[in-house]
Length: 290
Image (cartoon, rainbow, N blue to C red):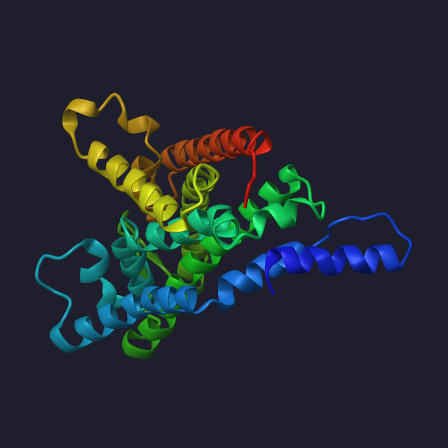
């Protein structure tokens, strides 16, 4: 069922009941069903889930020593590190690409299919439509991040057990406490990806080609990563969304350090607000022809 069909059905039910037309959670539910049942999205999430499995099996077969990143070299100590290592590996490209795909398709996909104009004549209201589209992006960002971590924990526990987590401060955390830290990290990273989704939503209202919107969003993400590696642009680094993503390592200290994490959350909130408002400003006055 498309978003337009969902709204049409909702409106019919409201009119039959003699009530005033309102749009509760049915449209959001339809959006989420479209996202999580499309074959291409399922295939993409399968790729996300395959990374922690491949990582854990590789370490189990060939060992985890040899000067790799801290997360990878610590996998054999606790299965939780499989999830952390997988998140670190997928952070630069795979997870942003997944979010960019959903965000780029949000409005441009409707326009490309010819359902956007019909959807807006139901009526839904452009502001409400954008809110629902962005809510679905945020939920997907959280679900994708959670999927990678959950698969990582599952395969990690199977292959490496539930040993204590060694923090960056050198202290040990029990499995339950380590799992709690992981959940906080998932929420933090999902907030960053949701902000990237707001950028994708803005790009999506500028075009009727979802692939173009996806590519543009990924390129923006890559450019921010590249700029963050150039020392001469150190004045720009604090303003880059991706600069703060790796700050999740501070949540693995004992006690947790929140300075960089707080800056990261504020930056993500700023990006999300600015680009959602930019999308609203563009979309509210856009002449929808398809």
